[in-house]
Image 1 (cartoon, chains in turn red, blue, yellow, orange):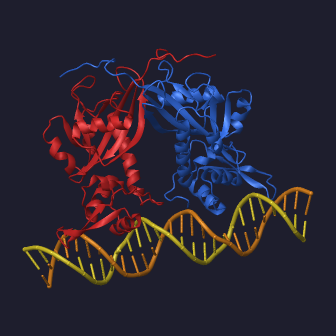
Image 2: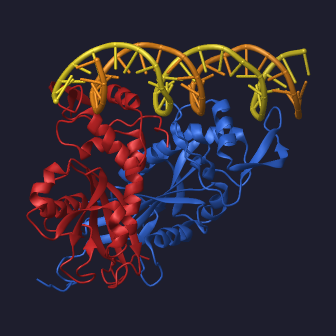
Image 3: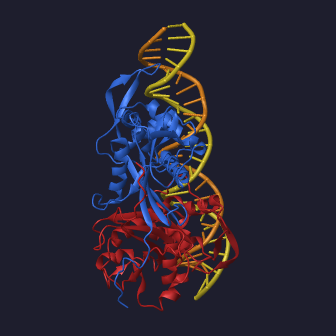
Length: 232
Length: 232
DNA sequence: CGAATAGTGTCTATCAGACAATATACG
DNA sequence: CGTATATTGTCTGATAGACACTATTCG
């Protein structure tokens, strides 16, 4: 049998791309949420995202970045695919699939922009349950948070929640906020050195006590994955 | 602005679900491939998969399982989402997205079935480059293989390439085939014990020397992830 | 017995945790 | 100096690698 493909043979699922953009701000893990202006779930908070525009986006990565840029005005320094979520009842319009990306950014790099708009906000992940969240986005955020927590144990990705120059103390706080547990400063320093991902800056900053060394990410380095997890 | 959703506002991308089903057979990592009966890439080998049937499948997981079952007659004991692959040129029909699953099965559980058909075969991953592979499926298989190799270093998933009862020697061979490097039998035994995922069977089997203890997976256990990788 | 494979014992290497010791700001 | 934070030194603990040693089966 040599059937030709018939575009109408199947009802196509609704397909969207959403992003979970995290940062650490005020000692809490926050996620970028958008107040929905359209149905369904109008007025609820939802993840930034939307439909692929196949005339503009040549991959779904581009869709995710385009939608994030609409809300934050910049591209996050770290983004990866999380997972697709699908079901016949997650969207009242019918079977839908959302491909979810998971991204990190320094809050300083977006706050100036989102302070000018009403409908985009950093929301503490621990306050989601007291808000009206669109679709299954709360569940999706939980899954993204689990992934971030895992990654924080074996990689340096949390550094992408910090601005260009940062101290070990800041990185330690960010990691501790993400995994919800304190870590050994010494272990962190060992990893910073072993990873060879970072360069010291010829400058130190005040910190309440001894001045702290500034670091930055070396240009064009890959994220190092360690062979052991930090303890949980 | 209160725009209503307009199904025709965007050209919907083609959306498919494909699976990379691996097994270890004849001391080689093999992937289940299907000879394509339809355009595009008719006559080439491709991954088992297809369109979501929203009248039957309530999630994409169901689509993956349904398509695998069509080709193998059974559901694999291990399946997880790998990743979505998208681009405007991976399919000649236009922008397309494929959500790819990654699954493992014992070859004994499918071989009897696929031996009766012409268009489904286990193909050695190292022989793919000499064949005509549809779409970007060769690249997708490489990505799935990398994921499997990583997982083999910190979890017991390779056991799902073995039948119900298996020996430590068989598991060792499967892991070594997957990661392409020999491992310490002792390390494997330590992990089998620490994971508490397995029960010994009151039976031993011939192996050329001393009889080997049979193991099986305890019912309803979760896959244990270790905090360290085996060395690479 | 010898060859082959299964399984154990045990020493080493690596790296995270714990925490003491030292360094450097600032008032 | 006292307090606070940064940074280093070093000991302990957990687990993987290496590999010798023992056990069991078959011809």
